Length: 515
Image 1 (cartoon, rainbow, N blue to C red):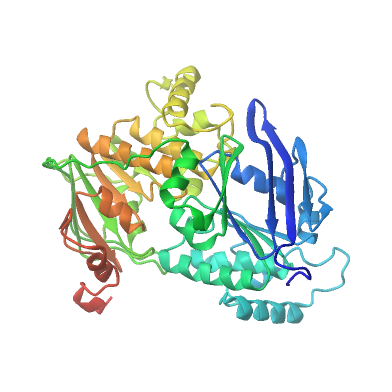
Image 2 (cartoon, rainbow, N blue to C red):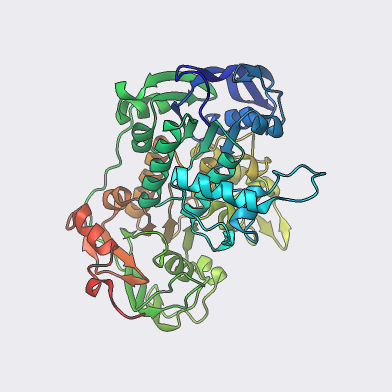
């Protein structure tokens, strides 16, 4: 695992890497080196070229110009198998695991030569167990991946790379879908790996994490390498300025009196979904001109609440009022008709259709009527005009409105969804993890847009696992725990520690209520 040479050995060298997608220059003559046992953080705005650069290194893309050397040898372009053989492993932002297979089967998949007579599963299991022990990656090798938490799936992806004897590990937004506890466990693993000689390229938008795990930071902007700095010699504020090229002002939330109740839940229960809890006796009021924050550890009923408000779930018990009336029918179509707009938690599965264009995704929820269709005929010129407006207003970095949305970075997908939602001027906004995977500049932009919608009279439900975000943006805050909702805490009434107590369940009769 540990290279023979000292810690100053250059294990990776990129020289003059350039990549174009039509008129878009994703990478512009980028060069840098990575040393043995070093963690480099790669920072940049959404669409700055980070993932493209790593896909070139791993062989998914072929550069238009430039070379990649691994341990002093040139890496043939466009061959992921050659990258794997050279000791390069990559954990993608969106996991590449087969849900219907076990952990061990996922790890061993692709490691046996095509003509090999049999797979030595016993030896494979022993190696996985040894790696799990050495690197603190506890996971059951016999468990079906589909039953694992997000944090456990992350461990499986890292074990896959280590099993193939990776000595250079690329982590693309590894904490984007992790809880703070899972992130802390991941960092513990990475420190153990680095101590054993692993070299890491860490891609993230979270500046605090970059400061905590890296020794050096590289900053990309518009496809160019614009800065390099030792982590110990900088701070979050300076890194943010390097990323966006300007000072970033924090959003400001002015005090204002809320308007009437637009949506009310009274003593609502919903059904469990597998291992996920449903809602239990939930009371909630969303008011015009107010941001209601929902804090909680992932998996405590946030999905159930979002599904109910979005029309995907019906109450088993209790009542719901919308604009003062009880809805006669409740469905996604009814929710849209009532002025509820949704920024979904999972932009890939429920927010976009991967093989649709940006234009098609921009009108996914409004295509059935004017101005985008009349008498069953689509007005594609109007739809494309709307997509172009979103691209320009929300700074969606893309080849154009006809491009397939799957070609965009996760952050740019999120910007398109945000534009689709906010440009419709909704009365109620369900914002579920709205800034997950966004850079600091885009986060500030999204926050300012949500505040502007609130000031224009919309009711906003902000669901976030980032307690700082909830406290900064919310007029009132609820905590959700095992499907139950805390009382509403006015802005400034609770400290992070106080909210953390509720998040751990201690405010809910000690968290011991019977299910």
